[in-house]
Amino acid sequence: LPCGHAALSFVRGVLAWSDVPLADRLKLLSLAVRWRWQGFRCDPSLTVAELARSCPASVFEQLLDPLCVAALNTPANRASAQVLLTVLRDALFSAPGAADLLLPRAPLDALLPQPALTWLLQHGARWQAGHRVQQLQRHTDHVWLVDGTPFDHVVLACTAAEAARLLAPWAPDWAATAAGFCYEPIATVWVLAPGMHWPQPMTSFPARNGVAAPAQFGFDLGQLGGEAGLFTLVISGARAWTEQGQSTIVKAVLQQWAAAFGTAESASVLAVRTEKRATFACLPQLPRPSAQPL
Image (cartoon, rainbow, N blue to C red; front, side):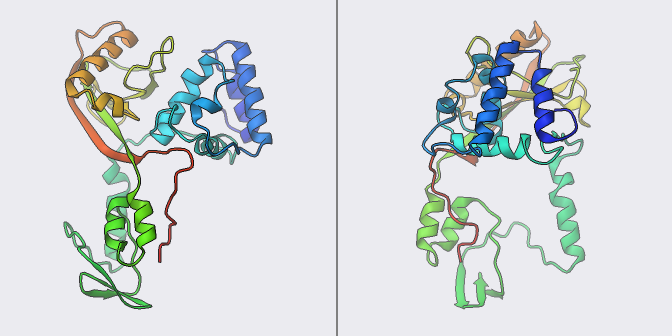
């Protein structure tokens, strides 16, 4: 989106979006006005696919569906429409720059956790790498024992499953809710294509004629501090693909590559990695545990 006031930037961005017909762009603007007038609220039982029934197919395939799997990592026919509306509100209609997309030129561990750890160690924190906490015990109202060591406060920065395990004796209802999540995988495919260079470091792969190929987005790592000619294709909401096995994913991605770039002879798949519990499935009316269980 162009710079400036959020609503005006959205209007300008939509009107300049030449990939879809003008009538469909105007329909998107009218839908956006309606969603904003309704306070970005809808029936909590709706899925994104149900919310988008009146949306032009081109807008759904090239904007709402890719945004749904990117932000919620859940297919549109299962994903919560209310959560997607919240994403649209926060990203497209809040502060200027809220929709800016930042791509890292450094590995994520160098960008975020390593500087944080360095800061903590400089301020007296004690770091125990590779130590899995086995037990939390409530010693008094103000003291917790973490594997027998007393602490004033405990922050659980871990998966919902681990949090449920540790808190089951002290907050059983909270733990049951946290343990009740279903999960969605993300698969990442590394493709080597020597000599290829994309116009931009990131590209999208929208559905064609209503048929979605596996990857929704791809990244040219050569433009992001990595090896030239190396690309990653990301499959969000990947359950339907991971259930078919890695060989099916490789074949489908190479077919997708050929359809997008006209050839696949020079492309080879180096690796496929799947995060089986990448995110929880963002379903309508999903019960969520509070951020402060005790």
